[in-house]
Image (tube, rainbow, N blue to C red; front, side, top):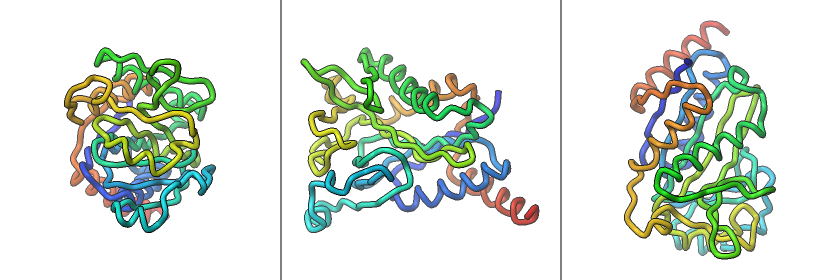
Length: 240
């Protein structure tokens, strides 16, 4: 089995995490580093996918500043979404060319990993036709537990998924989440009616990702990652 290094970045700004992703993607394309899964939380931020519509941002710039919410336009797929404390954000940077060259399959496997992790808490999450992400039944409709938005270049993946553990769901009122006006977001904490720590959930998702992608998941520190990256970048520079 090939290895995938899981790095817990903790709370990290969106711009810093995106800059780190780009470095890892470049090294992965050059074959100078192994697959990586970044796991983190972001301070309040709204991101717009390349297919998104600006009108799905319901808050003014003044209101965003007032609430301390940043805004970024990104290269990922999908529409608009919110990231914030209490949410697990995962950025798998994988050489999909060595796994399976199928973008739709990749997205379905991200969903499957989160569906399986959720089931371990006694909650049934599912897919909804035509709506990416994972959903939980709520009366006659569904509520969204996790969102997905990915980017793939030369079969190397970036961006990823956001899973609501103890997220303050009121922040989703600032947007039309993923461009779907008639569906609300939910969280694992809301569904279980108890406090849930990130540490209860993130390792489960990582484990299922490893099983689905045929990767041996190995935890590593941010320091170790940066050392590997610096070595990889020197290798790429010398090779070039």
